[in-house]
Length: 335
Image (cartoon, rainbow, N blue to C red; front, top):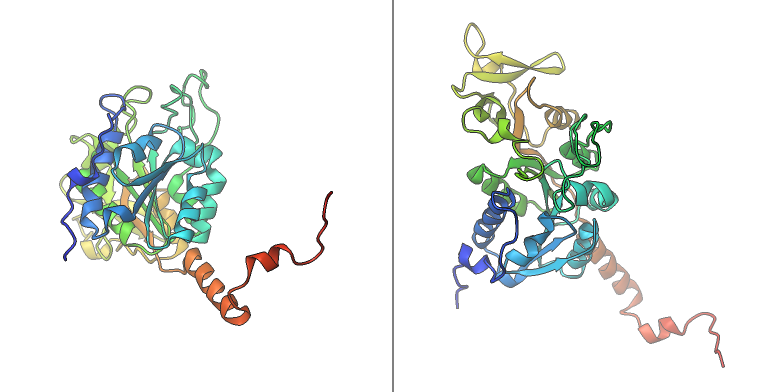
């Protein structure tokens, strides 16, 4: 019997979606619910894991197995799920606060280990659930309830952080760019290893208009660079600008007057670390913001290595006996 055809409706739960009206999380939820049924994976083989924050409501709204963990610990729980059940498709919903503050260590070690799971980092540059404190990605000088005179912290660059942790799949998208976001999620799912997707997401209550330059139809084409593997870096409303290298540094050029497409930088998802870091640090107003897959490379996954290690040891020493293990060595009997 052939497997039933799944649709978005199959991934909608009976729970009331409780985000503020206009929140960018709705767009991300819709993208996830549209993408999952297209992946050819049985619905019972999906697990959505989250920590704490607005983003972490996601497991309640996606009709799959789910686990709402504690603050920042979603990557650790998800790692355990994947190692114990390698056939599952495991997704993490986290935010710039949950994932990069208290959960920072858990996030980077998941990336370092290359666990085969998908991390969606909802980045609104603010603490939304706790009502508007600055977050690890809030811009320098940001005035919030916890920084009334402006933040003096330098913010994290999530993509650069993921690359620095040896991330094998690192990408970036925007909540309202539906087609781009969905294609990025599909690419993340198809990657064997940890996929990390930073999603710029508007918090219309505590940080409204933070990403207008990337989402507003009137200006976004001049401020975003949609990366396509093997294609020249062209952007702009009239598709008349591009990125080329000047020595080792990128520069924005206008096509024409001797500048041709062949002069532009060609995107390579498998490029060097220095190339990926260069893309990670490009941003408006000097450069357009690169969106899409910034880096994608193949590397062994930790769950495969663990399974192989267990097989090898079992073949050498036998299946083992838990009772013998417990009562081996020095035993004390307390009376």
